[in-house]
Length: 251
Image 1 (cartoon, helix red, strand yellow):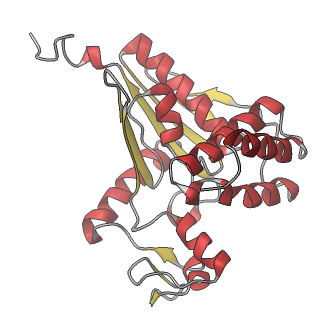
Image 2 (cartoon, rainbow, N blue to C red):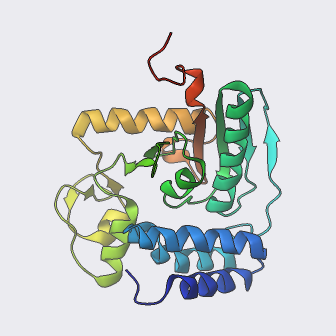
């Protein structure tokens, strides 16, 4: 966790993004996402990501001012084209769309295409407290009378951010995390970045990751597998009262 106060980190991060033509509200949203991940102990999805975002903005690989389009709109589902915008901005818009559909139809699913790294999915859940599904990670949130129950996990052994962090400090990674470009096990984070992460739980983890890819990539009509170039995701929201009575015990 950073030794600097959270508010100072948010201001610094938002200023850095705004200096690259990101609108101030969007810059503040992304800053909130990154700093909250730090505070929640998810450093791999926190400020570690900021230099990569800034580099991609400078290189024109992320659109700082996207024009979102909602297409394939249905009562309980929609497809959001994020115009290669920042992931957290697209994620929050998808959250809003999913929740509004859940309120009207009892359930809401929003697929997102042409986006970028969305960050820690718990960020959205804490604001919507509703079930979520992402690309390779899976997250779900359930409202309670107190703090919501939040589950946020990758379907690989670890999130890619752990590999990036190890490469930055030049430390080896544990065996079983990844393989290199030739499919051979490796403890070298640089080689792992050129290869692929191993699934959580062997064959069952692979099946779970495949399920997520189909629900997000195929549902969004986005490139999947080796053909992907932009992040895609599926977001869902549900209204508990539609599944049971207020007592929780049915009729």
